[in-house]
Image 1 (cartoon, rainbow, N blue to C red):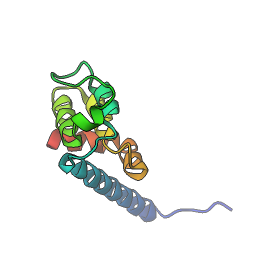
Image 2 (image 1 turned 180 degrees about the vertical axis):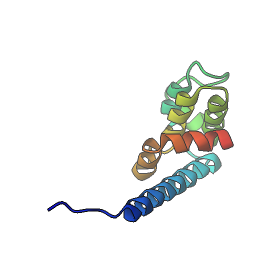
Image 3 (image 1 turned 90 degrees about the vertical axis):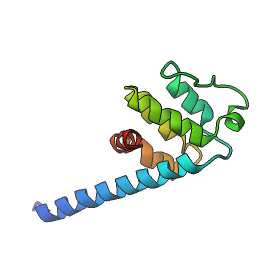
Image 4 (image 1 turned 30 degrees about the vertical axis):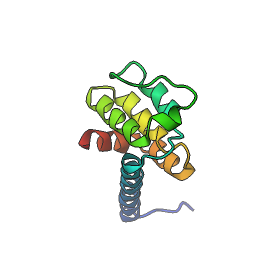
Length: 120
């Protein structure tokens, strides 16, 4: 016998999933824009943004100490607004490379990441 899942349950689940996705994206990206410490995702972000906007640093040794996470996020926002959607989103995801749950949240919600970038 097949189980029938009520449509209202499916709707509630989808709504809850969207709320969770938006919340985890907001929380992680807001933190990234405020953090000026060691940037583990600097090389990842620099590779993602290469060839997009001006003044993106070259990936390399020591970049994590020279390119703060908040600066990388500013550049990801600028790239997304300049039409480099994929590159901006990839760089934003790099800001949480040190945090598996934050990284997973961003990587699994790229549309929400892009929407966040263009709103800032």
